Length: 631
Image (cartoon, rainbow, N blue to C red; front, side, top):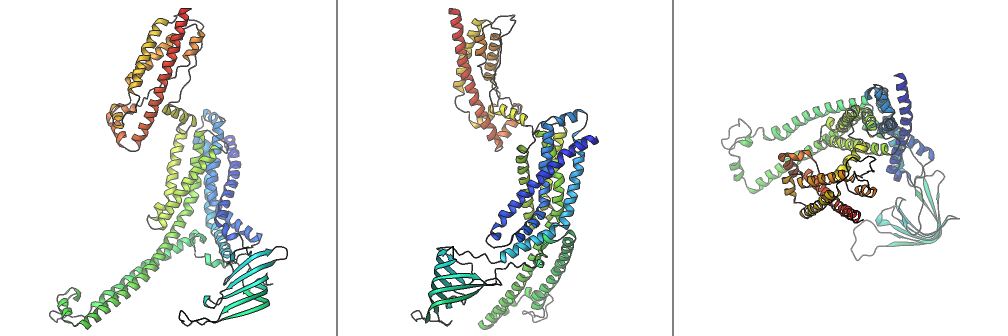
């Protein structure tokens, strides 16, 4: 057994290393395409980009491990089954679970390493990675003024250049809109040529202009009439320098801005945040309830009098009789004053309530986000084990190794997991589902699929065997089988050509009558009412086989060759159609009934073609018999 375990490990581990490298590379490419707009055109050094990609690769390792385990286990057991090595091991009395034993331990170890890595390394890596991304977004873009269009990346300026001299760096026919002092005091500068340079400290742009004019409004901010003229200043210059504040240095942001996010916290920090936030939320809810009760209810209605009797009310005077009569006796000014006071009180209470609700909703969102992140640490590590119990039995079932089919299946399964996990996490973060149900949804799906595949593989099921499915679909779609006959060496009873000829003529008449009755597709309800048993067709098939069996005793090679032209007719034989209740159930349930009905119509069309071909073969044989008799 030790040699067997070493053999399986030597087959699995190199594939795991190779697939892990491929999966990590794919995830890094996905990260690159996602944030390429934040990196291009910023003039950042290779060292900064390399550091960001290093932290991105560390952050992608927990997601690359499950996919690599799935692909490696699928390729390992698929290759063993394809080369009959798995069959030989099973023939020695070793079960599939026992063969998987060393790899199960390996998957559990990798899951534990993934969990520790997520808790200790990934939060720091993601904090540094997103800090670099924030710094890149805040950095000014690299100057590259295009020809023939306005450049708007310089704050407060729009620069237009008609032509650029690439050798000398001279900008020709320039137009600059300067609205750094506000749009009301905007200035327009036109120059024959100019140069744009960066200061030594890379914090300013020095724009040197030659032979131009500038136009600047001198209007104040006071309101003017429509027809009133606005004074402006016009200046002609030969040489002019403009200093523009434009920091082109790359300044790393403070890492503390990412410290409060859930992705940058360990499990201990997540648990502490969740507990403290939950306690603060509960205490705040209690204090808010008491404060609203005092401000809205007790302070508003206590000490009021009973308007009907003048006595001190026993309960809240709002529900006492007499207020309506009292209010109606007031003059209009007092009524308006009371209503305005009531509206002001309601607006104040509503404003306070909205502020508290906004604060509580944000706190609840943070609480759900941290809870989802906490559960994800466990579910992502568990997915390494679950993917192994999917890949290993699936490889043993499909019996295909290499990178072809296993890669396609692995990608489809991982997409299913990724979509399910994102859907459940999103539902949990939005509060639609409980946190546990949303986060563990993908794990439940994987566990169910893994248990099903492991059970089928351990019992040598052919449910996912490609050859079995190929034969199944051939039976469904009615793919033709080829007849293969040869002349018998010893013939005990020669065929009765005269009787076979009469049977063929009679068979052709019956087949043509059958084709006439089944030329048009049967109506949907009539199809489910009568069932699938076709007695007339079964009789035709039996008669045809009896003719073929008799003619196989012929000594004529030409006759034997003609018999191989007969198509193999396979009528529909679905056992569930024997019960009327099941037939009606399938006919009513959509889309099961439609699918079966379409399959039956296609099958009937192919049966009709087979009958036509059989009639033509009968006619040729009858003609051949006549020629032999004439000779």
